[in-house]
Length: 155
Image: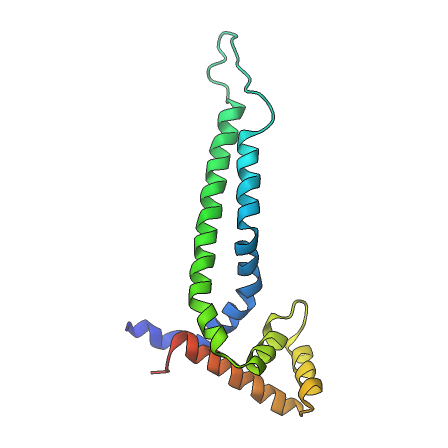
């Protein structure tokens, strides 16, 4: 293992991975539709326009431009999709190892859209009838468990 691994803030990286989950899931779920749309735009509805007037050979061909743009878009979509798949291959097994309660705690504190950490802790306090410090400790324990599952033991 590389020495740099010792300097990675694994806890912060785990939080970032938690927060990215829904966006990455969206990439996976929308991939086929995005690809189809991009390919439809490549083919287009307009017929190719041929310029037969003299001196027209230097002008851009809109059909060619659309195809090149489409190929670039497909390449980006494929790269993004492959990165998303790698993320899930890495993240999902660890996420599934957590208990149902741990997943709920992490969802409430990190993954709920437009919700602050305090709002997440309040949700935990209400659900489990616990004090804020207990909710905070439960959140930390769940985060530490996920971090351990994702990155292994601390050295």
